Image (cartoon, rainbow over all chains, first blue to last red; front, top):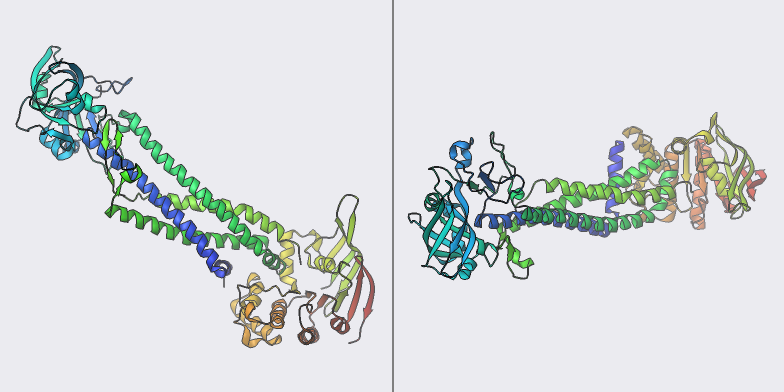
Length: 402
Length: 229
């Protein structure tokens, strides 16, 4: 038998000499590993689902806008004079699953009050296919693709300016040519975003109406919105500067980053706690075998050989636990793919309000491949470090004694 | 090759003022075929002298030699290898590895020495045969009696054909019948194969059977007697 074979046999026999103890250690480590993998998948998928829910109501994963649309010094300040056309987008694939929007700040007047809002002109049919905006209309109806001069208002906005479905509102703004644009539009629906601020600041109309209102040349618009949630990487498009939504909506981006990082921190702490328990168990196990280590040393096993055999034993246990943990984590993730988790389980049944919109997602868990090697690596790292102290103590004490 | 302890002192410092001699001016030569016992009360220094011979501890003063090799000049790992190559050990409480069978316990030092598989098999069979346990090689230590465990321990110590076997109170945990059988086994191995044995013992039956008795008191070898057995 080779030296490696001897080490493996010796380590394996030691691993199974106390089956109950090894079983408990392996199970605690594997359940921890499995939970962390599930938890990270949940946090990742949860963030995505929340964002998807949020973005499909109003915005999109990718916005293609004119390079001067968002001013560099304040990307949230709209400049509706900057327009875009399809000719300016070199990668025509980006046009396949996206929809155009024109956006402009306007005043909307009811009988008693006038308020400033952001008016968005939509390609009605594409919007219905790509976004959930239509679902948010809970009074009246969505915009008619064939209709003209129709407007949808946020529920709170309608209430504040005292208008209801069927009423007409006066819309006043600045057209692209600098003239004052004004028109009467018929309220056909009210949007309920769950009571957030956006209900007070958003209004939607047909693309054609918006283009005419803002005196825009044919084929010009402000944004293209893409809803491809699968591709996380930013596309490289020659001639276009690509900015991720997290930069355009930094508050939400920060929240998502916080959730992701916090999940990693929690995972780290879980592993640390398991490791401390493991270290203690290893120390007890090693000390129980102290006399054996002395015997081994006396009959000719070098301290390095004894150390190596213990490391093999711990890593053997770790490998079994990690493999089992990965399987467990993946099994639970897969289960939650077919049976999505309702996020309201964690909010006491209350909806999440994000960016002024109500979010009620069912989180379908998608496995993220990087967690399947990062988590085991983290476990191995902690296993390695938790072994150091018990090993030093044991090897130090096992020398020089008959 | 001879093992030699030359003017060896081993001092344990309990405190700055309080120093205890584990061994004091010990001079000892061990030659091939010696069958020797270190005898003395508990704490007299028998085990210290055994530890010194084994290179498990180093003398405070003096020299340990094995042939031309100065053991005190070797590193810890080199001394471990030296024990593996030249020494066998027998313990009062057998010290078999519980996770290995009897045969595997005997194999273990041979595998550390990297002996070929065939030679390991032959040596293990030979050693088991010498101690009368040919049929029990597959048993784990807990499935063996105390006497059988001590026989496995002896088989482990002789399988590598060492130049010296150090035995610390080898009969202390055995009943008198088994102890006598073990003493007879030591004698047989010494006579048939010229194996060198150094015992640390209180057992009068063993003391009566050895060729040389070294009386140890306060770390010093106070008297040496030769028996003609």
